[in-house]
Length: 231
Length: 231
DNA sequence: CGCGGAGTTGAACTGCGTCAAGTCCGGTGG
DNA sequence: CCACCGGACTTGACGCAGTTCAACTCCGCG
Image (cartoon, rainbow over all chains, first blue to last red; front, side):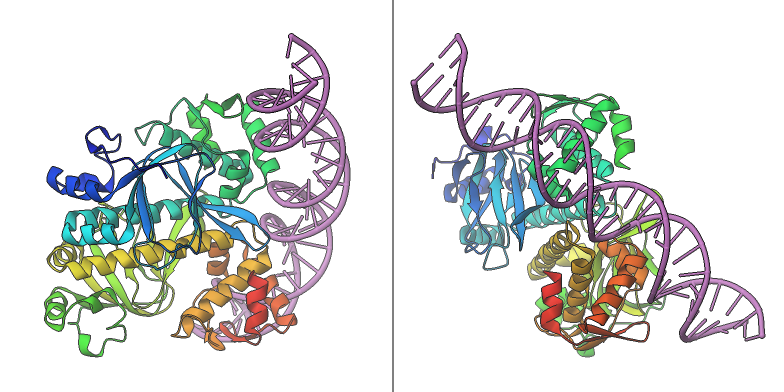
């Protein structure tokens, strides 16, 4: 529960997160209500069914939002990247688990305080609304990726999305990056098995489209072919 | 482009739609900016790439939000039920097609006027935010349904969702209703083929869980078994 | 009456899941 | 330092659920 005070001045997401919509004075006021928390890889922020009394913006690292199908299989519904926001603002209980994929730093608020702030500062509420809309589009993009596409297309599409997220700029993929997801996580996102993901990776490697570098590193050798495979 | 004036007093969704958050005077003011439009089955409200200068709440009928994979296959990303809201508030272009599944009545606004109104009336902006959050949850629920579940579970889950939507109350399914979706639409939502959907329907019927009544009618004989099949 | 679109059904094919080894790697302890 | 272990990942063989392809039925409509 490491609760330090907030240092907004050198926050890496200070002008992309929801709070970037605030004036410096307003932000200071909000910061007084929040605190920093660090999550180790695999640690869960909150679980489905918990009181939804927390919310947070992600400062660094990566989170997953997961559900479980009756037989215990994990389904990943969304990834959260830095500057992303998590927490239920309108429902009494959390609907899904939120778990750190890598060591992560969060800017944590009590939900009631955050709601009060977004009522007081309309620009904050608007920024959150915009963010919810983006989450919706990402969710639909994932839906599109997972529905009725071959295993190769799904894996290629996910790698492309991760490469785009890894390079700061959203439209050209990073040439080299570390996968934040285990094979099991990828399988859970794509609705495949671990084995299928692994096979598709080796297949993409045999075609010289990507190259694995250790368990988690990845080189994108042919971005165009990767995009084509994702079609 | 049938543009009548708005008659909010006897609007069937007057206390469930976003505008229900407004006071009567505020609503009158908003209504002055909007107009009613009727869409025939199959007619499209706007298409991906269009300027996003329109938004609307659905008064009656049903819409689908669709994308197309390269080879022309249709993927349905979401359904819109009465009181639902469509339109991009934060992006310059529409991302997806929006098409009427059945004859539908919409309450139509220009986007700029609607944005102005939601800036002027914070409760309207908040109601839209809440609605976006609900859409997000629905999208994730669909993601969960479509990922790694058997064809039977997907069809059963969709029928259950449609039955719940058809009964006004969201938690007990209607015993009899008309499917707003064609087989092709269902297949497009679930990531299956038309043939698979058809087979699963006959299978559910053989198990006496549902009963088809003409091309579109459906009786839910055993809600509990249907829910079990959707697990 | 004949046409066309939507739906159903059947038979054969195939991509992915399942199961079962096997490999790689980091950590722990002798 | 090496030996051993366990977890994450890879690879192979096989079976099956769902796709594909191809009739065929049903029904509304000109």
